[in-house]
Structure formats: structure tokens, C-alpha cells
Length: 456
Figure (tube, one colour):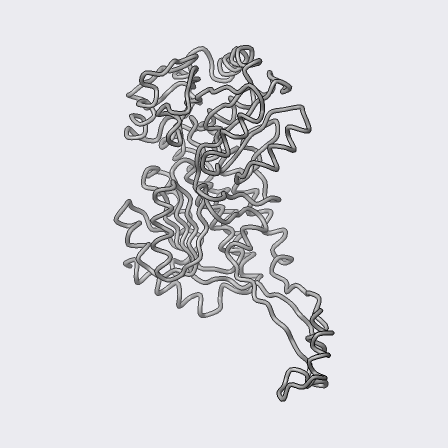
């Protein structure tokens, strides 16, 4: 079945109304969850082959999060789908006002390679919960996970309801030429702009989960030992290939040297004296990205790390010292295990540095000063973040996750996922036993006075 025919079949299936009953959606979520559990071993094996992820990391950052998200949606779906009552203005007397969530129709989910299972399945769960049909496009850069996703989906759903399209740029281009009712894209800014451009042809609403240079700001009041451990975790998880990884460090000059010593110790404790020999340390996804990240190290002062293995496509956790704002490593999102270190004297410098750049997907602030915390939270615009930790804000179904400005638009997780894949219809139901004549012509001075009373 070609892509155009597949979209047509899904639209016909959606128009049949089969996806709309809440009981049906709950059953589909249940079956998806059970199939993920059945295939957990194969999913972890595929993640190991594509990215060298350990079984622990695969569960912590991929399958475990997916199962948690599906379970949360199962628990709350009936509440989300129920019509919501709203107060009715006096001018609409006598009637009642309510909103109804309806599915958009046929959704397209395009996922990236860095968390290839989780970033495909979590949006799918939201699309199903909202009552949509869905086409998934996994990344060709993670081919084993892509194949497992296709087999998993085929084991649970008929293709006219949920289907997987594998392939690369040709398939991506063909999909974006189709008319979808919603597009959910996770990836880089460059392709995100293309998705938005293609979606504009049909005025298709989109969610763009992109990225950017997410700062980590550490002031002199921070708990440096804890900050070092938590920064190392967030930065070097998945070999730095995380959209919300701290991209660079802004640290107060007075604590830079003691902190870098603690950071080096934290890296060695987590990954060993030689991280490239650690069997649980992930690799860079492919040679192209290995060369790109390696190129960012050229001519830089390496404080720790820097070792590379071209055969295994691994780069050790690396900290760069003496970095300036004009350095090549500061001109693009790194998306690898390289941490540039910059300094500031007072917090206003760090604040200005971040504000002068594109709005990041995340921001991390390590401080024990409540005034500094409030100041940065109120003045800096970013998708989401943490105080005194890194990246954990996305690992919950109780808050939305998304970007702002150049780092994306829209959000998902939990209730936000349901809302993202739903259109909320506003309805006023009027009763027939009273029909106020004020709105009908002819318009008189008396009606005008009454109108002003109603609309004050």
C-alpha cells in the first residue's frame, strides 16, 4: 500500500467512527501496553545494537517511560474525554455552556533517533487516547528499533488504524506531501521549519519538539558536589544525545575550579577511568554525527576526556575549558558528550548571555539563593527545566513538556498529550421556553440600554 493510499484508508476508518468510543481507546491503549511488555527484550536488544544503550538505561529512558505514560492515560482518559461544563453569561440566558474534546482525525508522528522508541510511542499513546488514527515515521538512523516498532504496531493494530512507514528522506518527503489533520514532529530545527512549511499548505496544526543550546547556570551558593553529579548525569546520558541535555555550562568564576575538579571525579565515578571501555556507555548514532562532534573539539582546550574511538563511534565524556561565545562549539547544538565551560562574575552576566540567544528547550539553575532562583525563572524564557537538577522535568506525565520560540511549539505528556491531539469544541445549548427579543431588529434605545447592562 503506497503512502497516499494508506492515508486514504486511515481517513475512511476514522470517518467510520470506530476510534471515537472511549472504551475502544482504552482497549487499544491496554493492548499497546501489553505488547510493549511482551517485546521489551527485543526493544532493548535493538536499542543496544543501534546506540549501545544498556538494558538499565533503555528501561529508564525508553520502555519504562512509555509504560508509565500509557498507564497514566488509561487511568485518566475517561475524565479527559468527558464534556466540561462552563459558566454561561447572562446574555445567553437561558442555556448551558460546555466543551467537548474531539479527535483531529489522521495524525502523523515523526520521531528522531536519539530516543527512538520512547519518542515514537509516547506521542502515539496520546493520539490513540484522543481518538485519532495515526501513521508513525520512525528514524532511519535507528533501523533496528524502527523495525521492532513496525512489528510491534502490526501485532496490535490494523494498518487503517495505526501504521508504520519506514525509510529515509524519500519517505519523509512523501509523507509531508499528504494532507494530515495533525502533525507531531520531534527533531532538529532545520527539519522542523520544513515540516511547518509543508503543514501550512493545508493549514495543518503541528507540534514541534525541537532543541537548542540549553544552558546550565551554577552560582557560588550551589551545592557543588551534588551539582557536579547531577550535571554529569544529565549531560552524558545517552552520550549527550538528548534534546534537553545541558548544552553548555555558565559557572560563577569564584567556584569554577573547585567545581570542575568535582565534575571530573563524578565522571570517573560514573563511567570509570576509561569510559570507552565501559560496556554501558552509549555510542554516537553514526559516522556523520561522530565526525561532526569530533570536529567541535578541534583547537579547543580539553579539561578532561576527549578520547575517541572511530571503530565504535564513541567519544568519552569531555569538558572544554577556556571557551568563548564565538567558539564553533557555541554556534550549534552539540548533541554529543561535550560540555563547554564559560564563566560569569555576577548573575546578571549569565542572565544577559542566555537572553541574547535563541530561547532554549531547557534551562538548569543550580543555586541556594531564592532571590537568584526567582530572578532567573521570571526573566529567562525556555521550554522547561529544573532547579538544582537536570533533565528530570520531562520524566513525568503530570506536567507538559515542550519548547518555546526556536526550541519548538506545543507540548505533550499526560493530559497535555490528550489535549494536543484533540480539538476542543465550545458549545452553547439554548432552551426554547424563553427567547429574549433584545438581539433582534428593530434596535431601539430601550434595547440598547438593556444590552449595555448585559455586556458590562
